[in-house]
Amino acid sequence: MSKNGAGVPAGVPQGTKLGPWVFLVMINDLNVSNHLMWKYVDDSTISETIPREEISQIQSTVDEFCCKSKIEKFVLNERKCKEMRISFTKSEKDFSLVIINNVPLEVVPHAKILGLNVSDNLKWNHHVNEIIKKSSKRLYFLTQLKRSKVGILELVEFYKSCIRSLVEYASISRQSSRVPFERS
Image (cartoon, rainbow, N blue to C red; front, side, top):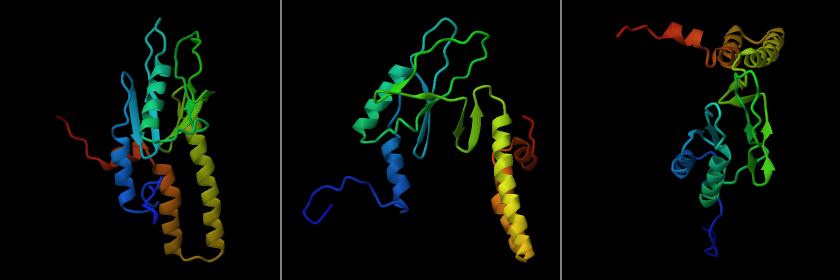
């Protein structure tokens, strides 16, 4: 509330411990019917599987999501919303573009979802290339730190926190070596 008693149009201040909880309470009931939806902080992903010879229903689901978002006073940024189509059929189906707020969504060949670069062909090439590009820049910075005579403990800490964490993120081969295998 403000001094004159008018309502504050925002939630809690950014960076507070209460902020994420308030956001979760607000977004948890923001769901759609008939399609899978994943929510993480301020990102939402809706997916649809279309059987052969069927038509897409994603536009009606997106419209439902937009209506519920407006009711909950969430603002959708249609410029940040993307559409990615994954298909292994020999002939591509011609789908109409998904529209939010009278703006057609851009159809992209890959999208970054929770730090993973997912491609429409479900191959890892784009993701691996992005990781290589990022880690190369950080390795260069590590060599600059070494040339500047930064201590070995600090160099190791930089490597662990800035390079190794990037390379190991969501790596199944690294994760499986840490979890003991159990037969049921």
